[in-house]
Figure 1 (cartoon, rainbow, N blue to C red):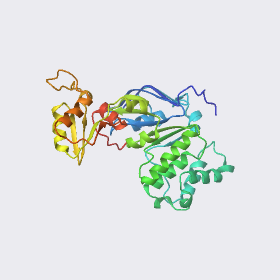
Figure 2: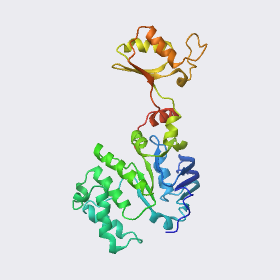
Figure 3: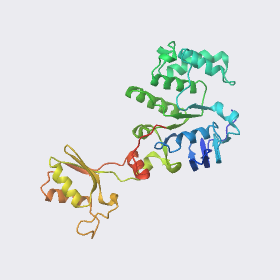
Figure 4: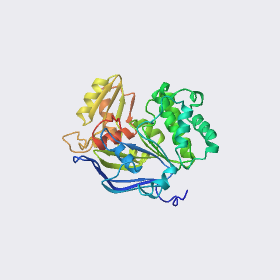
Length: 330
């Protein structure tokens, strides 16, 4: 496979837009760059344009404007040259229910003009084993659970050596153990130098496995970059552990802490500076220092067992960027 040097990003989009008939703008001027060798999490709420973007990147639909490239080659113009190096699982696999898992993979492999029939059985067995379906290979696909179907779709994407994997909600339907196994597999694939581009509605999953991320909302890209950098850019929540939770919440509120939440002996809230209030104590004269908040609690007779600011998370960053919670179907 003739692939440009590794300095080229695995995925790149410039000004990528999609306007559907009737005027709906699904993706608006997307500039995206996915480093080679990264595990890239693609995040966004319902209707944000994630799946439309993925379909344009793979050449499944034509963009209205802008350009896209995979492995340094323009899409969809060079689709035939580049797609053999790309494995994809988009919106769930299309399976033949009356065929076994192994026979489904044989059909997929036979449809690939670049696949060697002489190595087909060995490659199918290896792919099934890699996704944990070796024991279920002889079962008909219609008897598979949703999670098993996801695994079989991933096995199909791994039948050939790949440089890039594009996975749309790869943990959909998996139980907690299956999710852990999927995370381990993604890390293993990345360790082999494969770039993994995945969309997900599970922020904690992305934070655990991804090295980079991008956040979309309402068809536009809000941010992209290393996961750690994005999370570090958000100030975490103030957390106080005390048997006097109600009194603690009252004192903190009086000193400019907002978004207060009480759960048992835990009181959390947004520190004054993070809330953008300037943190006024006496009439807004000066910002409130965290040490001052702790002293105010103690001075009011609140028994403080623990006090500090929790590390910012990817979820904190997402909410700060989009102004909404995270409930994604695609």
